[in-house]
Amino acid sequence: MTPEQLIAQQLPRSIELRHRFHQIPELGYAEHKTAAAIRAELDRLGIAFVAGVEGAPTATIAWIGDLTKPCIALRADIDALPIAEQTGLTYASTHNGFMHACGHDGHITTLLGAAAILKQYTDLAAGGLNCCIKFLFQPAEEGGGGANKLVQAGVLDGRIGPKVSAVFGLHGWPGLKVGTVATKAGALLAATDKFHVTFVGQGCHAAFPHMGRDPIVAACEAVLSLQHFVSREIDPTEPAVVTVGMFHAGTAENIIPDTATIEGTARTLSPQMRQKIRASIERRCRGVAAAHDCELRFSWDTGYPPTINDPAMTDYLAQAARAALGNDRFFMVPRPAMGGEDFAYYLEQVPGCFFLVGVEPLDAAVHPPLHSDRFDFTDAAMAVGMRVFVKLIRSWPKA
Image 1 (cartoon, one colour):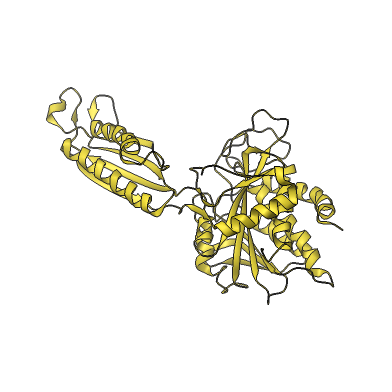
Image 2 (image 1 turned 135 degrees about the horizontal axis):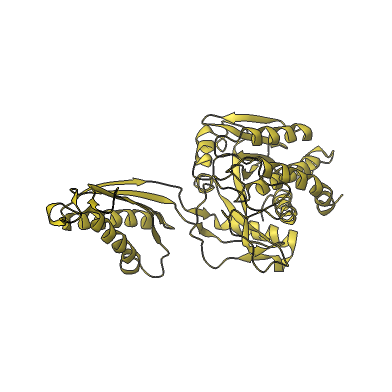
């Protein structure tokens, strides 16, 4: 059978599985039902696996094929989000307050479907694959850094299964129509650092502000100053985002509090800009605090690195996607997106490519965005992801 015939045969099973995964969303490192369902399907397929690794008990690592040949890793993230689903689907979440609002249910089943098809090729007597395949079912992408846990545990370097030569992963993307795939060489997604800043003043009665030191005024000025930073200190051709998303202060309208706290995120695409933006945010906040005679408590939470695709692997992905889908179904995106992805940790260790698979139905004018309480991964997109994954493996080694 051709890959297209095998995928058409597999798709009904994949749809059934995705709907099941969609009903049991779980947060990072707590994906116990999800992991059990993944492992049950691998058992059904006759694919051996490692259940859990150090620091990530809900991870599942499997591999098939000739272990004397180069090993190519394919990854799917498996966690969900703390969002109450409002889709009204017959297969909506049965876990109140949680849902697969980022499409990880589709990622899981796309990879399981690819595993089912590739297993058939490795079982062929003629044995036509020039690589072995490692499947990474990874927990805790949504802020938990599960990819870094798997890297530290040894899923790439040969301590767990064969050593990985290249790695590929996908993400469903509402901005692309079903049937299309896109990516770019170099930075595709941004670093996801966070900052937490507390201005410490002196509380007093709101009617007598001169008797205290108002931290709210200082924090408000800092918020405005941080917006000026990107427009006045960053080259306008260099993407960067600074967003203050939380502001905490006060207990009553007639009391000036002792403290005011702001929290936010900084998104950058290079190590150099990442260092610059941290230094500038802290400098501006300290300057504002000093001007208002306040003390400052500043902390920086280093998030995911930027997702930087290897140029050679990006070219290989482009060749595979065009061959699998048609020349008009693959696009090089012109600029990065400022969202983040912990797939970046794999790309720091081995060459690879992270790519985007369209999930916007052809007849839809608007599709709910990622992290929306109305988002649902489009079933037809799984066949597209499977076709690309299978082509990547069957075409190896790259030209």
